[in-house]
Image (cartoon, rainbow, N blue to C red; front, top):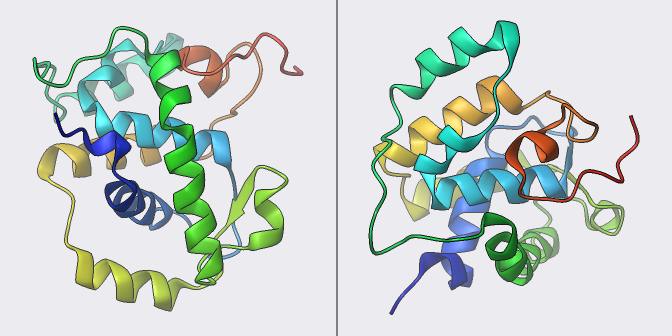
Length: 171
């Protein structure tokens, strides 16, 4: 059965849309992009992100635009294992974008992505189509709440999502 997570072209499609949320020369961690990609694949999983304290009301109100319904044909049991299975596709997509000059090649080895060419990105986005409404809402919600949010640490994005190991991260 077809699964868009294991389709390199669909992974490129998602990564291009994710990168569109960042500015030229802005450094983004590869792990952050991978986590965001996971939530584009499974938008209803944003409800499992641990939201704490003062951010609770605002983040929860924004979630109303993301369906909580689970697609029975596209379910996963372990998000962490699944994210590791799609890693080769995500990295291949980022390497391809680096070969096109859209992101910096030298930073990928440091697990960072830097958008270099907004014009190329926009040109490709104009030709590949848009995200569906659910994906647009999810990507907007992620960029509002987790664009500048710490990735590492006990209250970081990795810890809150549980998708990547965070216990060895620095404070």
